[in-house]
Picture 1 (cartoon, rainbow, N blue to C red):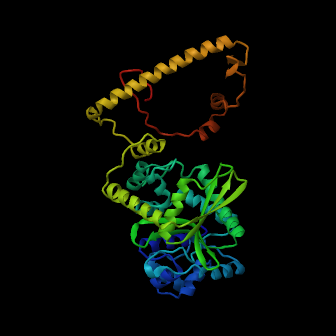
Picture 2 (tube, one colour; picture 1 turned 90 degrees about the vertical axis):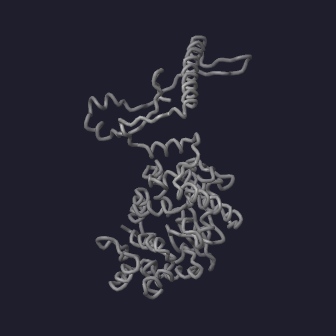
Picture 3 (spheres, one colour; picture 1 turned 45 degrees about the vertical axis):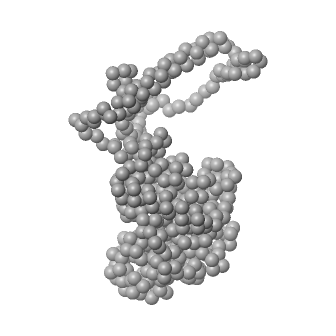
Length: 422
């Protein structure tokens, strides 16, 4: 699969503490740096290089079945030239995003990468569990709409992926990522030097990041972060993305990043973010405390009311032991309050239905109702198109069965009352 072998090599290097740069990889494998740059730029490795990579990293640097992509001569020359611009940071132990290829070529390569990224390899899961990444930091800070400290902690201790990994939304985000990066590089006049590069902070092995891409701007290296959104515009980079990029800059020890965002599939916006060392230091302190106090110690952070935390709890305890009964006596007060809320909601639901029925009866054939001359309610006819599931099952049972998804769940039900979901 296009580019997988190079990504596997970069992951293996990071796990062994080797900077994923051409110079760092070459030193560890005992081969010329020029040879490594040529390989990372797209050229297939020789048998001798494969043997050296296997001895150093446990991988030959080739895809199974001879799937290593072949690029044209011009593309190879361009990547060889781009490989040496960003500078080798291996001297201070920093894993800088320099000279690493593996971005694949053509539509088939892009599709293959998207499928791989959506499915997430076991190695990628293990890497995420081994540290705090840029996609974790916003959740730890409490500024993310899709992650919380508890959901991040759950993923670290169980390895369970977020709910939307492998979804249609994630698939298209991955498919469009390279197109967004390529157009951003064209508009900015910079050269992409690497894609999907795993990094480790030079002074904290648990602080990690995988850059969407690194680039070279007339000899100055930087970070590219690609986003797709349904928002038609941004007044500024959302705070959760800004935190993510500041984390990447801190881990990479690079001065600047460009966020390239495709809005509603129609407009590309570009945002420059400079590294703020004070912010980076603060993020390191916060993430470091989270890592030591919760992940290393195995102590979960506080529960909150978010949907992300609810989903994380559901993933963590998806399976059950039917004969196991938990003693909730210490939480008796909470259980009593939960029942009160349940009863209040049930009463409000009945009251709402009663009032709605009374208002409808008063409206009659009118489409709107006013109070003191101001429209306060409408009741207009409308049509909706829905799939007739029962008819489909009756007339096309095989098709219905093929597209019937089974989604396990664990609804929380109060006993001794109405029995509705709590």
